[in-house]
Image (cartoon, rainbow, N blue to C red; front, side):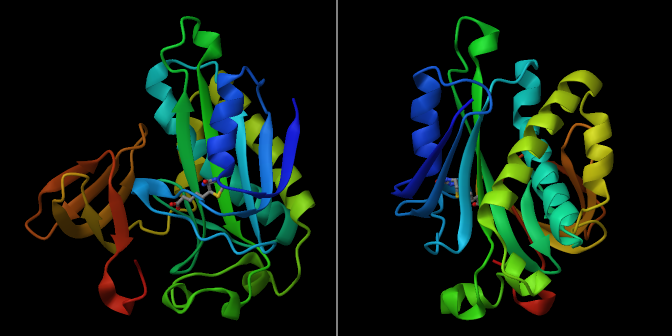
Length: 254
Ligand code: BTN
């Protein structure tokens, strides 16, 4: 397994997908100090303040049935949150499905993309886990638009953080989490994930990929990762994808 480091690149996910196509092995990673075209979820872009954040992508060949592949996103969020807490003694929250949060502020996000899912051999099906974290970002480094709703590990811990140590802890933690998922299944993982859920019991809004909006109280994700919401009329919704946000009480969420 190799680690490819770049001072600047368009997108570490794009590069990792290319390496996976070329047959890079499990655990191979791409890390960059800056990205010119960082990709976010749902077709958004990811602002990558040069030198201040962790921008990395890790290639996995999970020994799991295809139905479990989308669930790796929860494994990734959990691995990142546990690495941060272990290193800096923080209390990292997760927002479904895998945003990294402190209180109502976002500190990082994860974009999971697949390659070779139609590969003839199941052992060649790969997933790229792209992780973007605000690390040594000061308030003024964030654009005005982001400042109200973004935070960083520097702002949370009050200390400057070594990016290489953080990367290595996340990298080894993610590989261990995937191994555990393969051996022990998804339920144990969701059990730990739920203890970090920032939406549970909160008023929230779900915008489906088809453009429908539901507002209600989050009941949290079930054992298969589906998020349950109960709306004001008492109807229960099961959310598989789309955008979820804390409802507007503070006006700080995107
Ligand atoms: C999100 O929308 O919250 C997910 C953001 C993921 C950003 C990371 S930065 C490293 C990797 N490379 C990319 O192009 N995107 C991911």
